[in-house]
Image 1: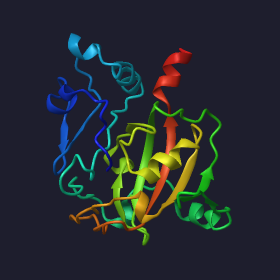
Image 2 (image 1 turned 90 degrees about the vertical axis):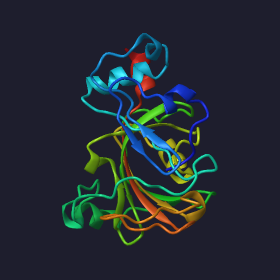
Image 3 (image 1 turned 90 degrees about the horizontal axis):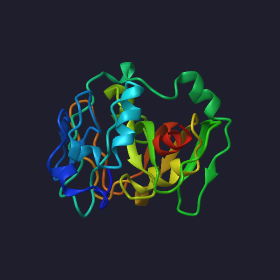
Image 4 (image 1 turned 120 degrees about the vertical axis):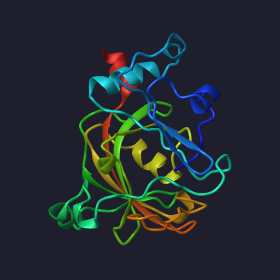
Length: 227
């Protein structure tokens, strides 16, 4: 879903830790942050370990989002969503949609626009910190092409490092923990190579606009420092 992070060691991409389940993309891989099995000593050395411990404590398995970039050949090839459209879990239901009509639109210099469904009461993520978020990604018609809710997994990625598409990276930066936001992402901040269609998932044309509903759940690094 974005740029393969340069900061991740080769072993993280090439050799998953014990218990990790790789989710294949065309030219890239998504690796679950951790599982309940015991980590080997070599993996304890990664600064990612603290995040894994926090995720397990919350009974959540994080996912690092990767995808169409100069380092990943081809488009997004994750499995298609399995539930029919009417049964897909959402961050914004019908009543939320009606309320959202009266929420003022915020526009940024990059072309990104957003509406806050709910303003959080926690901290905003500093650049370089990891965040754990629920994300429901849609085409402008409302069809969902990716959803952490349906997968039952929070998405974990590092803000400002290019691990996700530019629109999501920018949009989550000014959110606060506990907040929910709808991002209206223009094509230049979305998927340059587009996303192929699959059963239950619509095609996303190259450089076409997309809509993301995002819920910022917590910031692992900040939480660990506070403890």
